Amino acid sequence: MSEAPRARIAGYQADPERIGRVLLLYSGGLDTSVMLHWIQRRYGVEIITLTVDLGQPGEDWKAVLGKARVLGAVDAIRIDAREEFARDYVLPAIRANALYGGGYPLFTALARPLIAKLAVEQARRTGCDTIAHGCTGKGNDQVRIDGTIATLDPGLKVIAPVREWEMGRDEEIAYAREHRIPVRGGSERPPYSIDDNLWGRSSEGRSIEDLEQPPPEDVFNLVTRPEQAPDEPELLRVGFERGCPVSLDGERLELVELIERATELGARHGVGIVDQLEDRIVGLKVRDIYEVPAAAILMPAHRDLERLVSTSHQNGFKRMLEDKWAYLCYAGLWHEPLHADLDAYMDSANAHVTGELTVKLYKGSASVVARSSPYALYDSALAGFGESGGEVSQQAGPGFIELFTLQSRLAHRVRHRGDGVDDRREERR
Ligand code: ARG
Image (cartoon, rainbow, N blue to C red; front, side, top):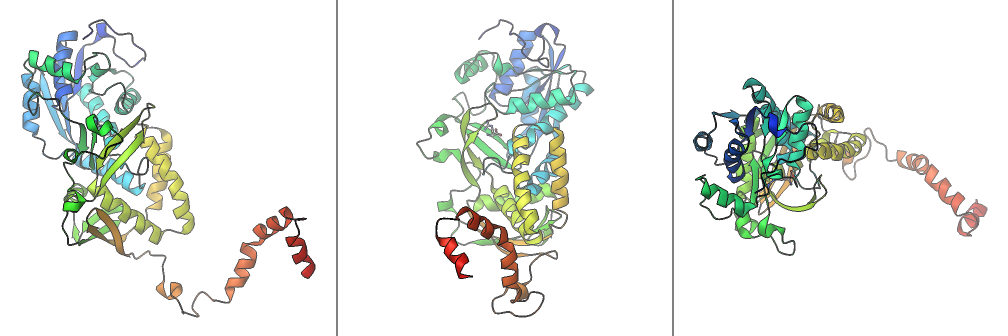
């Protein structure tokens, strides 16, 4: 471990000589527990911890706060931010069909701007001038957290001890042992780096890094292996209003509870396992194993409903904006004005995304098998085979085709002039 003061690269980084009081974003895991001890020793300052509940399944919050106090925190704050997370972060992502790299529903990326915002608020309230967090110097989260803090309050400073202390996992465990810091699950090396909340769970590191091997069985903690899922399919009805999921099987639910139930159902049926090779903002490629059962049910359902109620022009255009939305979120640019511009579009595009979908859950798949909406731009009388009359005349077809293909036909003729075929055709006229 190096004790030499580090050079500050960015203006928002704390000057070690001038740290007053620190607000530490605390999960209760190894990194932030070691950090809680290390910062007090290294800088001789008071620490207040902030723990944010975003619906991480199975967390014992009392134990986490107790541990913070035992390790010397002058105060340990917990905020239940589940509702705000669902309403202001997950819902816009659903409306934007936001997937990064084709498969990642962004649960970690969505949580970071909220965590950073709460940290700024609590730092101000408790008289802290510096925020500390457990992000590494190789990941996306540092970009999201540092960037959001520096945006929201340029007066606050940041420290990220993992970027400077030069301890590996084993050294951290040794440090923990030396200073009697309790380590969850004993003192073996924790097998994977986990992040989870209401909207999903990710695992990285260790044997997952071997791209040539399928993910080891012990990665999966949420979703049943599809092979072991029930042999009977289950049909689930999902109701939407203005792009927001509001009911399951006809029962109205608050968003947090709806997501939790969808998680349970999807997990039981082996739905939502994603093995993704991902391009980080910071350049590196990483392999993540995602378990995202709720997203795997709700997002395809939402997309299907959108397709039903929107015009072909709207459907085609929105895809392009969705990719940009997902990228800005992934990159931590939550407060970038373009993000608000895109959100305004997404809200408007979701104004009529109201209806009900039936999703079939079966051994790893969640597929939409039925849909209905008062705003459906679908008329079975028009679409059906063998129907005549009504608003669409079959005789109108050739006239449409003549005009619709006009420019393409002209271009083809002009470009192939002289190669024989089209000249002959013109002579025939
Ligand atoms: N790759 C995802 C992201 O950058 C998830 C990272 C989650 N962190 C973890 N330690 N598993 O948003």
